[in-house]
Image (cartoon, rainbow, N blue to C red):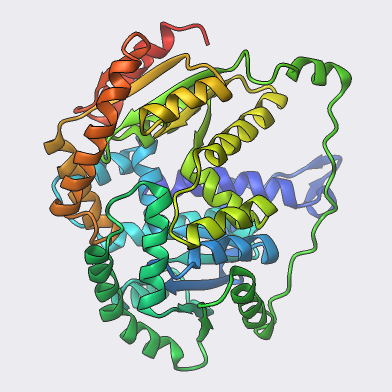
Length: 452
C-alpha cells in the first residue's frame, strides 16, 4: 500500500541517517555508500522485532494517560493511541485519510485491518529510534489483541491500571468541572464503565497467562502509582533512559529587548465552534500553512497538573475537590505559554475553544492580549450530531450519544451567542458543512486577507 511504503521510507530514512555513524557505513574509496530505501525499510522492520511492546489498559478515569506520559519521560518509550492515529490520518488529507472519512461519514466502523495497518506503519517508522512502544487503550476487546500479535508482533506484557468504579466516577465528575464538558455525567459514565468491564475480563485472563500482565493499583497519588509502574518495568529488566543535563536558555540583551512589552504585538485569533464542528482539524491545517502557535486552555491545564509543579499541585487539589479552576489561573497559564513562545520569536496564536463565555474574552483582552479576530465554524446541530455519533463508532466511547450531544449543543449555543454578538466586528463565520478541504479553502480566504 502506498501509505505504508511512503510513510516508513521517509521516517526510517531520517532516523537511520541520524543514528548510524559514518564509520559504520559501507564505504567505497572515499565515498560512503548510502543504504537504499529498501534497505532502510528492512532495517526499520528488523528494529521493530527487537523493540518492546506494552499494551496499556485502564478504564475511563484510571489515570493511564498521565502514567503513559511519565513512562515516556523516564523510559524513553513511544506513546501511540489508535484514536490519535486515525484522527491524524483523516486530518492529513491523504488518500487513506479520505477513505477513512468516507467510512466514518457512513457511520460505519473502521475495519480492524486498517487500524492495525496504521499501528504497524507508525511502529515501523519509529522503531529505529525508540526503546519501546506503549499502545494506549489497546486492546479494547480480545480479537484486537490476538490480531495484533498475529499481524504486527507479539506484545511483551499488558500494563493494567486497576481502579474502582467509584474512584473512576469521582475523577471523571471532577474533570467535568474543569473541562466544560457535559458528557461526563453519572449516567454516561456508568455506561462507559459497564462497556469497559464487559470487555476487560477476557483480556486480563488471556494476558495473565504466561506472566504477561502487570496489574497496577491506581487508587493513590500520581507519584505513588508511578512508583509501582517503575517497579513493574524494572522487574522486567527495563531500565530508565540516561537523561542529558538540561541546558538553561538565556536570552541575549537584544532578545530581552525584543520581548519587552510582552504580548502587545501578538496576533490572537480566537477559534470557536461547537462539538463536532471540525475546528480542531482546521486548527492543525492553519498551523501547518501559516505557522501559528496552537494553544488550548484544557491542554495547558492538563500539562500543568502532570508537570507536578507547585501550580500544578494547586490546580490538582482544586480539581479533586470538584471545583472550577478560577479564571485567574487559566489566564495566567495562557499568558505564560504565550510569553514563552513570544520569547522564541512566535507572534501569532490560535486560542482554541476559547473564550467559552463573554467574561473569559473580556478578561483575556484586558489581562493578556488584544483579540485580532474570531474564527467561528458554523455548523448545523444535525451535522454536528451526525459527526459526533460517527466519531463514537470509531472511538469506542459511548458518551457520544444523542441525549448527551443535545445537552452539549444547548450549552454551546447559550454561551456562544453573546460572544458572537460581542465580537461581530472581528468575527469571520466559516460555513463548515463541507469537506475538510472545502472548509479550509474558506479559512484560507480569511487568513490571506489579513496581515499576520
